[in-house]
Amino acid sequence: MQQQYKNILVPVDGSDGAEKALVKGVEIAKRNKAHLDVVTVIDLKQFSVSFAGMMDANGEVVYQAYEDVDNYLDSLLEKIHEMGLEDVKMHARFGSPRTIIAHDLTKEYGTDLIVMGPTGLNAVERMFVGSVTDYVIRAAPCDVIIGR
Image 1: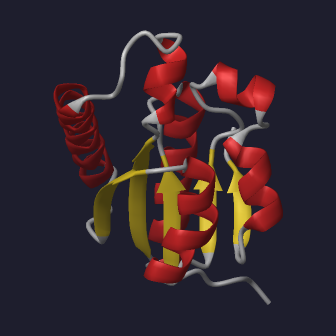
Image 2: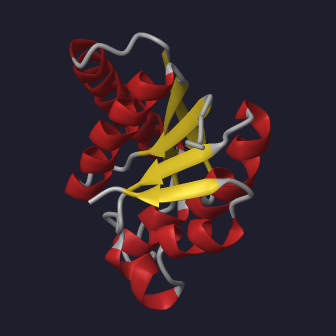
């Protein structure tokens, strides 16, 4: 018996791996006639690490980050529609990517499958805390597929 998925979540962060996982997620959604949620999580701690604590994440920096993410998601939405999937919703959230992906969004959206890349853009977090992908694999209450 083949697994049927109804609500698929694909986290993206601008990395090649995430965008390859997005293509895989779109293909799975089309085969299953499923709804697709695409999310980017803006981690404000990343700004203070990136600038070695020299800059606080003030309102202008946060606004610019959100604008950049919004433009990125709009471009991905166009690509998804070109691939033939219409049942898709784009999301941007602030917070810890691992918690939001593995816990918050799976509950909020009724996610039964997460498709994500093997690593993201934030090398500092992978080195000190472990990758978001590793955490999601261990903690998510649904199936997780790593798209390569």
